[in-house]
Image 1 (cartoon, rainbow, N blue to C red):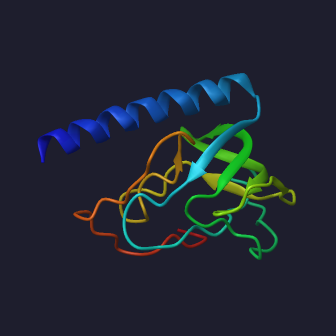
Image 2 (image 1 turned 180 degrees about the horizontal axis):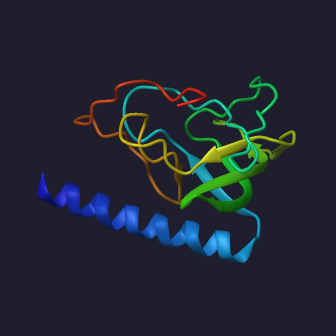
Length: 139
């Protein structure tokens, strides 16, 4: 519907601005992980988009609702979070994350939509959006 599309455009613009400010500041920033469409429960870690180095292991991959803290980098015009700590979904304490674990801000329309969100937002996957695949490494 039109109001839902308008609301999504406002949220997308606000997230783009938040990510750009975080990248420019170089400061640690917190985001909420939530795959915006489809039924996936979270996202596997990604490797360094600047070097291509892999993330190591995925034993602590974040589930929807996790809080991720790190530094935002802009690589080839896209925002990526170099993650340092996470509060796992349902948890209450920050836990360190090993080096080399990154999270793109957006998986694209066929891979879960927006992944990183303002931690104060309520993110509800859009029931009307079809997801072609769950977010997996090497998309």
